[in-house]
Picture 1 (cartoon, rainbow, N blue to C red):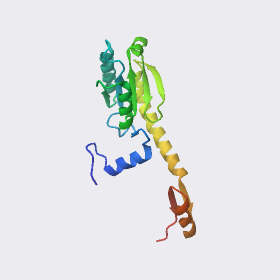
Picture 2: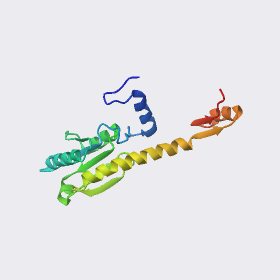
Picture 3: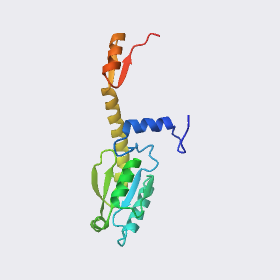
Picture 4: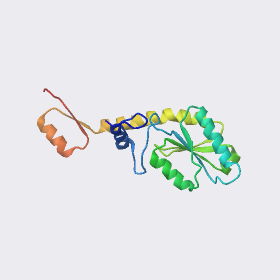
Length: 175
C-alpha cells in the first residue's frame, strides 16, 4: 500500500475523506492534520497586522501546534475557503479591529463555530480545541456508523438489507 510523506496510507486518507469530508472539502482530525491551525490576517496591509499575525503564529507553535500563516495577497474569503477545502481544523482570524480590542476569532472547521478569545488566551484555547475537535469528530463518526448498521440473523433478512437498507450489515458467520 502506498504511503504518504507523513506516514498515512492512501487508503486511510480515503477513509478520512469519506467519513469526515463535506461539501466544502476535507475535515481533518487534528491528530493527523499536517497543519492544525491557519492564522489568517485580515486587512494585512494595515500597520501592525502582519506583525501581530506572525507573533500569533509563533505563540501557537510554542503551544505545540502545527501552524501556518497565510500572508498571501488573496482576499480573506479566498483564504477561508482554501483553509476549509484543505480541512485545517482551526483558523484564527486577526484584523486591525481585533488587534485594537486585544482579541481574535477562532473558527472550527468541523462545526464552523466561531469563538472570540483574547490574543493572550488564543494559543491555550486552540490547543484545548484540538482535543475537543478530535473527540467530537470521533463521536459523530461512531454515531453515524452505529445508526447505519443492520443486524440480520437469516439469509432472507441479509438479502432484504442489501436491497433496502444503506449502510453496514452485521451477520452471523458459521463458515
